[in-house]
Length: 194
Image (cartoon, rainbow, N blue to C red):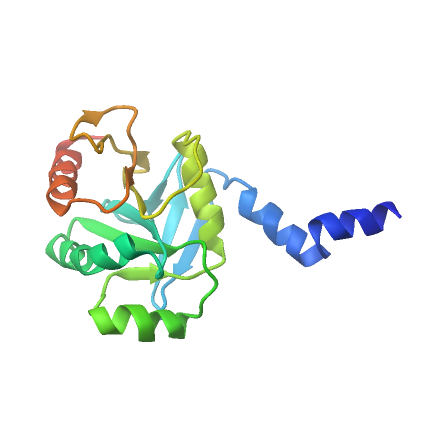
């Protein structure tokens, strides 16, 4: 009887395992290979309380978004332009979150029609990465997208908040991000020595 109740509440073993995996934290030194919807890969490494790109000192931006989200759709071409402009200093990784669509769907209905060329991952691993990010920055609220964080050498950067103020406790952008604000914050991050 107890097994039946647990099965009803948590589903079958595979689903329960996937949920617990999504909520588990990465360990320092863990390497996570992220595959894009175009079959390219990038490896990120878990640091003390963040992530960095393996064998690179580029600034890492995670953009957590959905293809159904109007602000996400509006800013996607701007993010591609930003990535192309700062390709030597920045890697932007888009993490599909909160939807169950195929890579083909993303390519045909999101990337190609808008000429989106930055790295987009549609991996089941995205949820675990996002959960770790939210824990790292002590984000206490329900996640709203688009949501971005910026890391340099595995350290979350201080970012300008919605009121135009850079504050040490603000480690994220929420909603459509102004590209000029992002540019200014990236320039500040590049100049910091860690």
